[in-house]
Length: 278
Image (tube, rainbow, N blue to C red; front, top):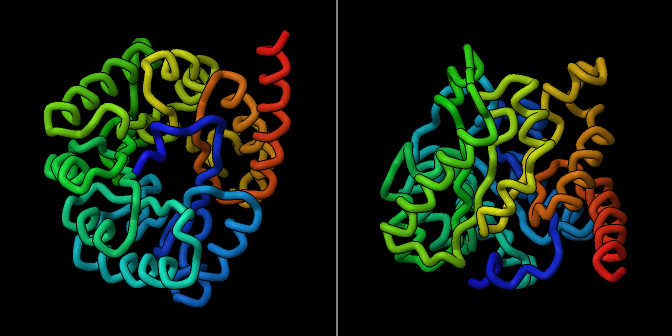
């Protein structure tokens, strides 16, 4: 699939957590009917990719077995493939090779690995053998402990270096260069200032030569800035980061709230395009 190779303008990745414990929407879409209704809503609002996860990666989350992840995600992927256009890209959000392989067999067209192949290195081989794109994300530590005491001397340089190492590992495993995307991992083992530094320098990740995915949706560090406690009330804050990302060249935005972020993306893209034409 040429999803990453042929992107001409930024796109929205809609989040579908089929988990009981995700930080913002856990338990809402665990049934097939509820999941399909949410997919329809996100598709109608302009999402081009649906990212399906069967394991929460919120701070403090416990790992979920491959068998349980497969039980949660594969029926949903099969139902989506039976009810929606083949043009819909489906991403499997997992760090486990067995889950990725079964999800791709069921119809997923993209692997989104928050561990960048460190949790299960065989996931890189799955991407290579199945000839599907993979997103490699930076995370310091594991979800269960990543926010305990994260520390960086130069967060932008260190995250870039880490991602380059994981890119090299993916290439060595046989993943085609045009099938690799990267994600700086906002909120994954990062302090508030680290997140802000990364957002201020997204162009450096874009400059690495691979499509960049940004995932800030409803994240706690924005709540600390805005004095908001409920993640669902951070839609506007998320849309601001989407606009900032577009202006710096980011190509994909992983969000819960598709309509609002699609509007931010479209306006920012129009402004960016106008600047280029002058």
